[in-house]
Image 1 (cartoon, rainbow, N blue to C red):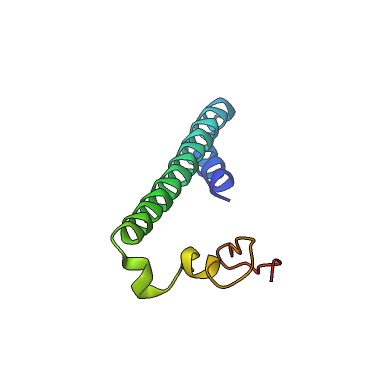
Image 2: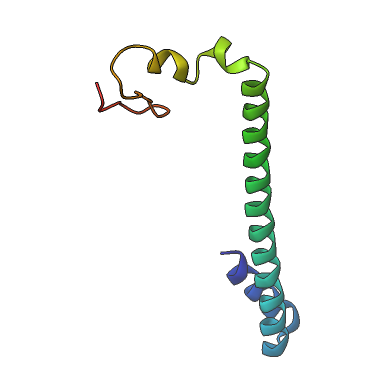
Length: 94
């Protein structure tokens, strides 16, 4: 939509096909760069959120919130096999 409106605007302003092609290519490159930068930003923001979660877990914040099971309690329940429960998963060893 942006590229089409850009092409029409440039054509009616300059009446030159060569100018339309050049500006449309330049606009598409700028759009691709903006998309790539936004994906990198989202990855960076996700990494920062993961680090904040790890820091909260390191300082004991996860026990207060209760977001992860305490693996020592799960192991000490019974049986000889360690019954590790993955995050949000179901243990098949019971």
